[in-house]
Image 1 (cartoon, rainbow, N blue to C red):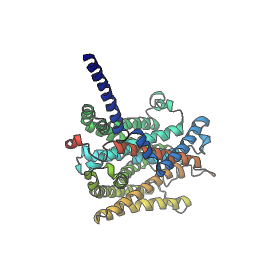
Image 2 (tube, one colour):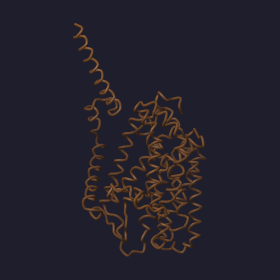
Image 3 (cartoon, one colour):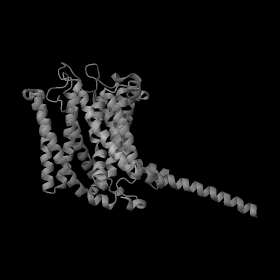
Image 4 (cartoon, one colour):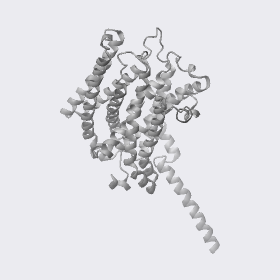
Length: 417
């Protein structure tokens, strides 16, 4: 009899362990559903369209790695890059400053008003840098040689050496900055406590890194004064890149906060949802100040380089489109804050993102090598790859937010913030 009871107890322990694992997987990965139920929830028209986009992009990425860049791009010695870097690196990295900007406001300057969005801002920054590296690897190829610019081709005077180190280090910093949310999700309290204790140090280190590489990315173009159009070439490029990245980061947080308020409100708590309007007004005021500064410095830079003579040219007309857009948004931000018009600030933030993307495209693609008689800016296959990678980024963001306490506070740590 005792042997039977001992065997039954052993069986019960095994069943209990299996149930624990099954419950953990269901709770952490499948949102409380069984695997079968979860897979059924994924079969939606939107997910199917996203899947087709991703499959198309992965196919062209595979072609790129098998047959080289010529299989998917119009790149040449004269036109060295296209959408992969203009979108993924030069346009993506400025918006990825969201973690540095909001983290600095909350953890260094103590502006607790922005506490509800700080985890989301850090996640956006981390994913932005991660996928900037993805785009860089697609463009460069040979991802197994990613360490070469830092360790093998060791040149401290090289801008690319600085950018490689800065991006690698800052990506690591943002991973650790976001780790408390991941550790809360996994229930690892001791590790989470250790990660939280590192927050201030990581933020300070991140500020130094972000300040350096945001300016270094545009500093590369100082090496090509004859290739970049005079209306965009200026010795002020590093400063303009840094200041505009702050404005772009603020704009991204405003836009994404609004989108989460609409599409992911079931994953947000009441504190997050109720604070969005107040946070938007505060960020709108900061964006207005930053973009006024950028506008003034931009106009000074053109005057300093003596480039106004190029205004009455096709490139001059295109420059006026860009500068008019970026000159309008700080006034719209200011008006929105004065009138407490949250919706106007949100629309202006989206417009700001368009203006900054236009500026980065002009510098890295459109106004670069402007004197070449025949240019193909990009190939349609590049656009497919870019859309696919951006879709993957959005899906990864949604996956994380659906599971981890990004837009909400974990109930076990309500008093820690």
